[in-house]
Image (cartoon, rainbow, N blue to C red; front, side, top):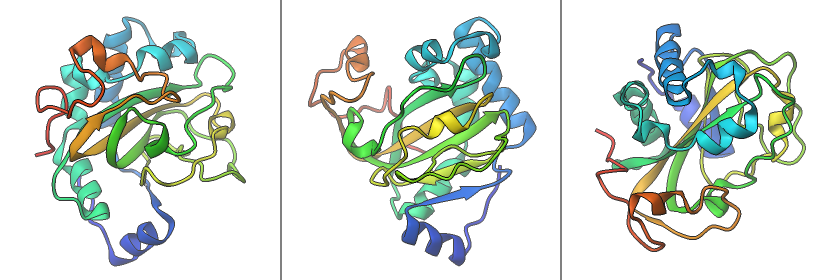
Length: 219
C-alpha cells in the first residue's frame, strides 16, 4: 500500500482533524486482515454477534501474526506520521466493530483521548474491511468515523468529537480501528473504556508506560 499526502489533504486534516482516503487497502490487504480476524474467532466473522466481536476484538494484532503483518506495514504509519508531524509512533491498540449479523445498536466513543485507557494517543484510523454503506450518515453530534466503502480509511485525531451513535448508520459492515500512541504513552484507568482492565492480563498496572514488547514503535 502506497499513498502520498498532498498539501491539500494535509490542510484539510489540520482544519477538520480528520480525513478519509478511499481505496487505501487493496482487496488482498483486506483478505489478509480478515483471515487474521477469523483465525482469532475460529469462525466466519459474519456469524458472530457485534457485542461478542467488540468484547473479544481488542488488540488482535498482539495475538495474530498475519493481521499484525498486514497492519504494521510502513504505509499506514507513514501517513499517520505525516498527518500528525509525530516521527515516533507506537502501536496503541486495535478494535473491531461489526454490524454484519445483528442490528447496529452499539454506542461508540465520543472523544477517544478522553475515553481510552491509553493516555498519549497520537492518531487513529478506522478501516472498512467489509460491506458498503447504503446511504450517507448525516451526523449532528460529531463526525462519523466509519468509512462507507471497503478499503477506505478515516484518519482522525483522538481529540476530534465523534458521533457516539454513528455505527447505527452502517448495517452489514465490518471495521477495524487502529490507534497509534506517542512514544511515552501510559496505561491509565479510564472508566468509560470497556477494555480498561485488559492490559492487566499482560502484567500492566495503571500508570505503566507502554513497552516495545506489546506496543512496538512503528518502523
